[in-house]
Image 1 (cartoon, one colour):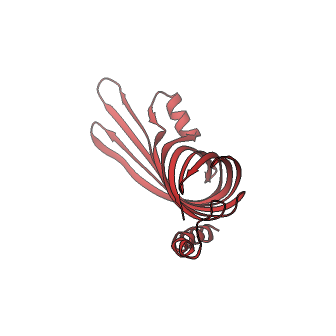
Image 2 (cartoon, one colour; image 1 turned 60 degrees about the vertical axis):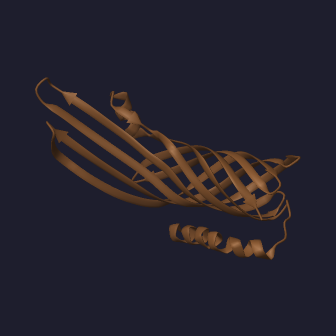
Image 3 (tube, one colour; image 1 turned 120 degrees about the vertical axis):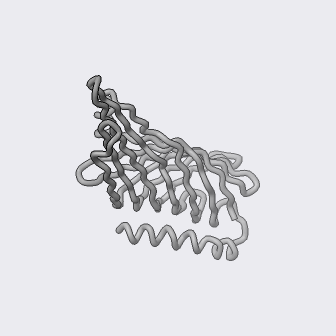
Length: 208
Protein backbone atom coordinates (compact mmCIF):
# COMPACT_ATOMS: atom_id res chain seq x y z
CA UNK A 1 0.00 0.00 0.00
CA UNK A 2 2.76 2.45 0.90
CA UNK A 3 4.51 1.78 -2.43
CA UNK A 4 1.21 2.25 -4.28
CA UNK A 5 0.51 5.63 -2.69
CA UNK A 6 4.06 6.91 -3.19
CA UNK A 7 4.00 5.80 -6.84
CA UNK A 8 0.62 7.47 -7.39
CA UNK A 9 1.89 10.70 -5.86
CA UNK A 10 5.02 10.73 -7.99
CA UNK A 11 3.06 9.85 -11.12
CA UNK A 12 0.71 12.77 -10.50
CA UNK A 13 3.68 15.12 -10.02
CA UNK A 14 5.24 13.99 -13.29
CA UNK A 15 2.01 14.00 -15.26
CA UNK A 16 0.73 17.44 -14.25
CA UNK A 17 2.76 19.42 -16.84
CA UNK A 18 1.23 17.19 -19.51
CA UNK A 19 -2.24 17.88 -18.15
CA UNK A 20 -1.50 21.59 -18.21
CA UNK A 21 -0.69 21.43 -21.92
CA UNK A 22 -3.89 19.49 -22.69
CA UNK A 23 -6.37 21.81 -21.01
CA UNK A 24 -7.36 25.40 -21.45
CA UNK A 25 -7.90 27.37 -18.27
CA UNK A 26 -11.19 26.67 -16.55
CA UNK A 27 -11.78 27.89 -12.96
CA UNK A 28 -13.91 24.80 -12.27
CA UNK A 29 -11.52 22.10 -13.48
CA UNK A 30 -7.92 21.39 -14.43
CA UNK A 31 -4.51 20.88 -12.83
CA UNK A 32 -2.85 23.04 -10.18
CA UNK A 33 0.40 23.13 -8.21
CA UNK A 34 1.45 24.85 -5.02
CA UNK A 35 3.69 25.07 -1.99
CA UNK A 36 2.99 25.79 1.65
CA UNK A 37 4.74 26.66 4.89
CA UNK A 38 3.34 26.06 8.33
CA UNK A 39 3.48 25.09 11.97
CA UNK A 40 3.64 21.39 12.83
CA UNK A 41 3.08 19.94 16.31
CA UNK A 42 3.68 16.41 17.57
CA UNK A 43 1.39 14.77 20.13
CA UNK A 44 3.02 11.59 21.45
CA UNK A 45 2.69 9.83 24.82
CA UNK A 46 6.45 9.36 25.22
CA UNK A 47 7.19 13.04 24.60
CA UNK A 48 4.29 13.99 26.91
CA UNK A 49 5.71 11.78 29.66
CA UNK A 50 9.17 13.27 29.27
CA UNK A 51 7.68 16.74 29.49
CA UNK A 52 5.73 15.84 32.65
CA UNK A 53 8.99 14.65 34.24
CA UNK A 54 10.48 18.09 33.74
CA UNK A 55 12.60 17.38 30.67
CA UNK A 56 12.98 20.09 28.07
CA UNK A 57 10.91 19.10 25.05
CA UNK A 58 10.27 20.87 21.76
CA UNK A 59 7.36 19.11 20.07
CA UNK A 60 6.76 21.72 17.37
CA UNK A 61 8.65 22.99 14.35
CA UNK A 62 8.24 24.67 10.97
CA UNK A 63 7.05 22.27 8.28
CA UNK A 64 6.52 22.65 4.56
CA UNK A 65 4.75 20.89 1.73
CA UNK A 66 4.59 20.75 -2.04
CA UNK A 67 1.37 19.69 -3.70
CA UNK A 68 -0.13 19.07 -7.10
CA UNK A 69 -3.73 18.24 -7.90
CA UNK A 70 -6.42 17.92 -10.49
CA UNK A 71 -9.89 19.38 -10.07
CA UNK A 72 -12.59 17.48 -11.97
CA UNK A 73 -15.47 19.84 -11.22
CA UNK A 74 -16.33 22.62 -8.74
CA UNK A 75 -16.81 20.06 -5.93
CA UNK A 76 -14.19 17.33 -6.36
CA UNK A 77 -10.42 17.09 -6.77
CA UNK A 78 -7.56 14.68 -6.13
CA UNK A 79 -4.27 15.87 -4.68
CA UNK A 80 -0.76 14.48 -4.17
CA UNK A 81 1.74 16.07 -1.81
CA UNK A 82 5.20 15.84 -0.32
CA UNK A 83 5.46 16.91 3.34
CA UNK A 84 8.33 17.57 5.70
CA UNK A 85 7.12 18.02 9.28
CA UNK A 86 10.43 19.27 10.68
CA UNK A 87 12.29 18.07 13.79
CA UNK A 88 11.07 17.33 17.31
CA UNK A 89 13.51 17.16 20.23
CA UNK A 90 13.79 16.37 23.92
CA UNK A 91 16.81 16.79 26.19
CA UNK A 92 17.62 16.52 29.88
CA UNK A 93 20.45 17.19 32.30
CA UNK A 94 20.61 15.49 35.71
CA UNK A 95 23.28 15.91 38.36
CA UNK A 96 23.90 14.62 41.87
CA UNK A 97 26.41 17.35 42.57
CA UNK A 98 29.34 15.26 41.38
CA UNK A 99 28.25 13.47 38.24
CA UNK A 100 26.37 15.01 35.32
CA UNK A 101 24.20 12.92 33.01
CA UNK A 102 22.65 14.27 29.81
CA UNK A 103 20.33 12.78 27.20
CA UNK A 104 19.14 14.05 23.81
CA UNK A 105 16.36 12.64 21.62
CA UNK A 106 15.62 13.82 18.06
CA UNK A 107 12.71 12.74 15.87
CA UNK A 108 11.73 13.76 12.35
CA UNK A 109 9.19 12.66 9.74
CA UNK A 110 8.37 13.23 6.08
CA UNK A 111 6.14 11.56 3.54
CA UNK A 112 4.09 11.45 0.36
CA UNK A 113 0.35 11.97 0.67
CA UNK A 114 -2.55 11.27 -1.66
CA UNK A 115 -6.02 12.62 -0.89
CA UNK A 116 -9.55 13.08 -2.15
CA UNK A 117 -10.70 16.68 -1.81
CA UNK A 118 -14.30 17.83 -1.50
CA UNK A 119 -14.87 21.54 -2.21
CA UNK A 120 -17.76 23.89 -1.52
CA UNK A 121 -17.62 27.11 -3.59
CA UNK A 122 -18.96 30.15 -1.75
CA UNK A 123 -18.64 33.21 -4.02
CA UNK A 124 -16.16 35.41 -5.86
CA UNK A 125 -13.40 32.78 -5.94
CA UNK A 126 -13.72 31.83 -2.27
CA UNK A 127 -14.32 28.21 -1.24
CA UNK A 128 -13.93 25.82 1.68
CA UNK A 129 -12.81 22.22 1.45
CA UNK A 130 -12.18 18.99 3.31
CA UNK A 131 -9.75 16.24 2.44
CA UNK A 132 -9.26 12.59 3.33
CA UNK A 133 -6.22 10.58 2.34
CA UNK A 134 -3.27 8.37 3.15
CA UNK A 135 0.37 9.24 3.78
CA UNK A 136 3.35 6.99 3.07
CA UNK A 137 5.81 8.26 5.67
CA UNK A 138 9.40 7.80 6.77
CA UNK A 139 10.57 8.69 10.27
CA UNK A 140 13.96 8.91 11.97
CA UNK A 141 14.66 8.69 15.69
CA UNK A 142 18.05 9.16 17.31
CA UNK A 143 19.28 9.44 20.89
CA UNK A 144 22.53 10.11 22.73
CA UNK A 145 23.28 9.75 26.45
CA UNK A 146 26.41 11.07 28.17
CA UNK A 147 27.85 10.71 31.66
CA UNK A 148 30.34 13.40 32.61
CA UNK A 149 30.82 14.18 28.94
CA UNK A 150 31.48 10.57 27.89
CA UNK A 151 29.03 8.92 25.50
CA UNK A 152 27.43 5.88 27.11
CA UNK A 153 24.70 5.37 24.48
CA UNK A 154 24.36 6.50 20.88
CA UNK A 155 21.69 4.97 18.67
CA UNK A 156 19.37 5.67 15.76
CA UNK A 157 16.44 3.98 14.06
CA UNK A 158 14.35 4.55 10.96
CA UNK A 159 10.74 3.49 10.51
CA UNK A 160 8.17 3.78 7.73
CA UNK A 161 4.52 3.05 7.21
CA UNK A 162 1.21 4.08 5.69
CA UNK A 163 -1.48 5.82 7.72
CA UNK A 164 -4.54 8.06 7.22
CA UNK A 165 -4.83 11.81 7.42
CA UNK A 166 -7.57 14.39 7.02
CA UNK A 167 -7.84 18.14 6.80
CA UNK A 168 -10.04 21.18 6.36
CA UNK A 169 -9.28 24.51 4.76
CA UNK A 170 -10.32 27.64 2.93
CA UNK A 171 -9.12 28.84 -0.47
CA UNK A 172 -9.30 32.03 -2.48
CA UNK A 173 -8.55 32.13 -6.22
CA UNK A 174 -7.87 35.24 -8.28
CA UNK A 175 -6.33 35.37 -11.76
CA UNK A 176 -5.28 31.67 -11.53
CA UNK A 177 -3.45 32.30 -8.23
CA UNK A 178 -4.58 30.14 -5.31
CA UNK A 179 -4.22 31.25 -1.70
CA UNK A 180 -5.01 28.58 0.86
CA UNK A 181 -5.12 28.14 4.64
CA UNK A 182 -5.38 24.60 6.04
CA UNK A 183 -5.43 22.45 9.14
CA UNK A 184 -4.35 18.82 8.65
CA UNK A 185 -4.01 15.93 11.10
CA UNK A 186 -1.78 12.93 10.41
CA UNK A 187 -2.46 9.86 12.57
CA UNK A 188 0.76 7.83 12.46
CA UNK A 189 1.05 4.54 14.31
CA UNK A 190 4.21 2.44 14.66
CA UNK A 191 5.01 -0.52 16.94
CA UNK A 192 1.93 0.12 19.06
CA UNK A 193 2.76 3.79 19.65
CA UNK A 194 0.73 6.66 18.21
CA UNK A 195 2.25 9.84 16.78
CA UNK A 196 -0.34 12.51 16.02
CA UNK A 197 1.02 15.37 13.94
CA UNK A 198 -1.06 18.51 13.40
CA UNK A 199 -0.05 20.95 10.68
CA UNK A 200 -1.45 24.45 10.20
CA UNK A 201 -0.22 25.96 6.94
CA UNK A 202 -0.57 28.79 4.46
CA UNK A 203 -0.04 27.96 0.79
CA UNK A 204 0.13 29.65 -2.56
CA UNK A 205 -0.47 27.90 -5.86
CA UNK A 206 -1.20 28.29 -9.54
CA UNK A 207 -4.02 26.82 -11.61
CA UNK A 208 -3.26 26.00 -15.24
